[in-house]
Length: 169
Image (cartoon, rainbow, N blue to C red; front, side, top):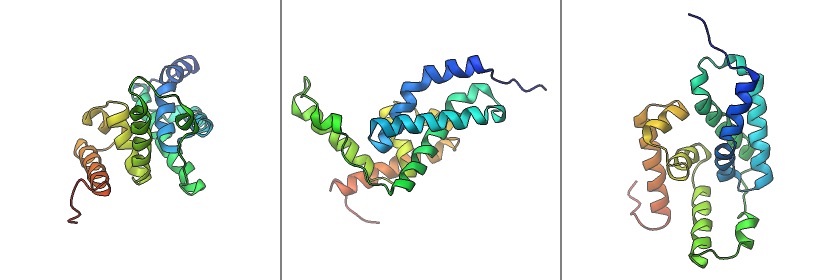
């Protein structure tokens, strides 16, 4: 059985096609445009260096997602997890929803900061990217039950923090 490899042209096309999605994932972790771009650049470089190790080109998107998540977590560990509200959100003009749209965005980013870095990926993929549990399972290479458990555990932690659920354990 021969191993199908991805050539540089296909690699470039796939990176270009998934760039915005990868950026959004990184941005959810670091909440800074330049840092998110650096993370995507680092992950892209890591992927290029180990492209020959990609056994299944059809799994490229999942592989890149895992690389961006792990690169984001490494970045936060190096920086000590200190993240402030994104400046563009603070300076943004209210949208059609008025100020509440801006407040909702800030609340969502603040809520993500309450989660351990390892759990953020599950919430980002589920609620920012609209992925199903089966898709999350494939992207993060975990059983589907694990993906569900991590999402629900993260939601429970957030509900508890915001006083929407009793802290029984």
